[in-house]
Length: 290
Image (cartoon, rainbow, N blue to C red; front, side):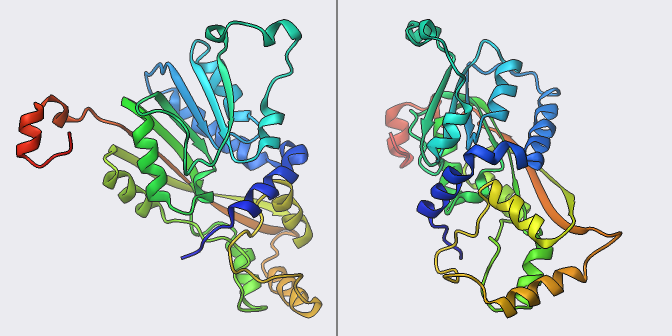
């Protein structure tokens, strides 16, 4: 089991914030595809949580789609939230609290600082892969979601960056690419956490590059570093680095190097809990919590 170093993760995203939007082509495309799925869902949430909001591309889309909804953007890196926050004039800063529609919270989505049943829609675009305990994260999302509320997310699957992983594996025995959770395992976790009728699917998106340096540069620009605890320290030796590059070069096709991303999509509802109609005495007799 891999454990991500959250301090390193936060630092990587803090450094990437200023240039993130220039390289986050894939993230924006997946956000667009997620939003198109909402076209088929007749749903008007009062409160929306953008979990892992980054620089706010998805938040802005959601605000346009649901202009009367209150939006809460949560991200682990304050620099990302600073990029997302709109530039406001002085009179907008003194508006009464009830007239404000967007809030920005710096927090880890594994420990969301929101009250029980306070959110109607949880939206999370390419953030769940940065969770150490996905089961606990989904349980917490279930906690803050209102009855009949919707969870919609995207994340990366196990085949993501398979070319890079295979190339490094031929150079040394260290893990240079993060591991990602299988789509079916995520579906099981949703069921285990009492989400209703989860819908899961996936697709492969392949980006192409002129060289390996281009792949690494884009990953660094969006903060997608290897932040696994116990990873190899220091720089890779010149000989091993060249071995990894040579292995990647064997995959060149039509003059370009591929970088594959397995994108997993999912959504599920929080159903009405039939146990809520039981009296306290009946719950006690059945051994259920009060």
